[in-house]
Length: 261
Length: 247
Image (cartoon, rainbow over all chains, first blue to last red; front, side, top):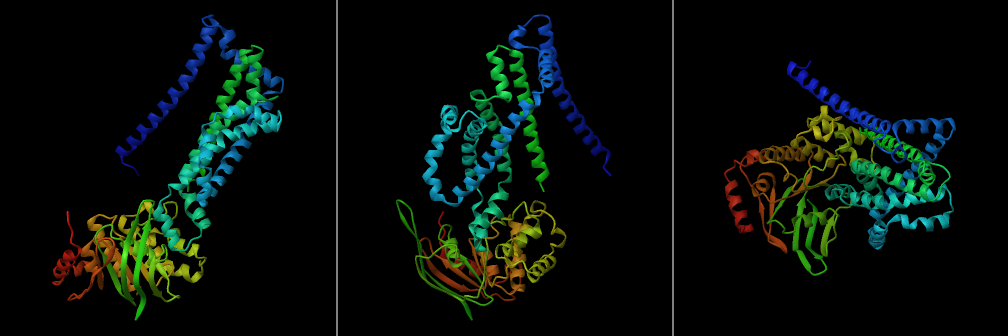
């Protein structure tokens, strides 16, 4: 059993945590309230800034049209596919670069160049090559996230403790053994961080792709809304995106906790 | 009986602008069951010699004669335990890599862990162990593959002084009990005298052998006890002069 002092300490932590959550919720409600209040009193131009009620109505209408989940699904699907390819592909390429330093040195300047190149500029080329389809959107998202994944993961692999590598070598370990027994597990946290960054990057890529070519998806909703001056639709798209992106982020944190010992 | 013969070992390192001769001329023999310490000023190429002996590095020239059936165990600075593996799993890493996870070998590891006071910690992670215990785990990990010769590369230098004394006592007794031959590198003269049967003193780079001392102490026992032997100061003085430290 805990002492009285310790119990009080635990209680204090709990209260503190509760207060933080409460304040976080309050901020959301406050923003929604002020926004709606300003809209009702005509303090802001609802044609441009929309209003919470209008956004909810838009969502309900989309739901009634049976297109809400279709758009969400399309974007979600594109994000997941690009995320998986970018993360897994990036890690595989980084492993090859770790194993073959020669290749790594040869392609280093190209990686640096591709990394600093604004990937949107590749948009038109991708569309011409891959066609105006989901494929282009996924390729776009891939380009944005895979280069930085390769660079970050390779760097993480390179900083693995040299003494531990020597230790395994003293047991006559082969490179693949060093990779699976040491490099991969010791970089677990780095890989999770790469995943967290990638979710954000892939979203950027997918929405950018949807702006350029798409017939459905949240990016399409935003683009379509702005073209017909339906700002309610644009705002709805942004809000949906914010919710989706944070849900994905928490999904990764959930997976991270699940796999930690 | 000599189990390891080294003759005229030479090692040069090449950089873009320079060629550095690390080891000029190094010869010595290791007898079965002998504990040899190599001391020398820092940066004199002690670690280089050890890396070459255990096959992690190649000599530029020279001859190393060794029985093909003999196995090496390498223990390097710090314990290098894998934080994501339990103590038990850490000890098995060598066997895993060599594909020798036989029942007999696993039993041997279990026996070592039990004998050397780590029975209750098998399922713990390294972060829950003290520095001394971690060092012991690191030694058991090396012993697990049943090496005949142990190479110790400043194994205790990451520990604080008190722990260091206790751990070197510990490690020494385990090595003697398991009847292993050992070569240890250290820059600590008293550690060398207290543990080794033979101390090899190296010169500054490019290193050659300056002197070899057979350590003969009255009432030779554990390293901590050995420090109290009356010959201790004599050897210390001799080696100190050989190394010729300048500040």
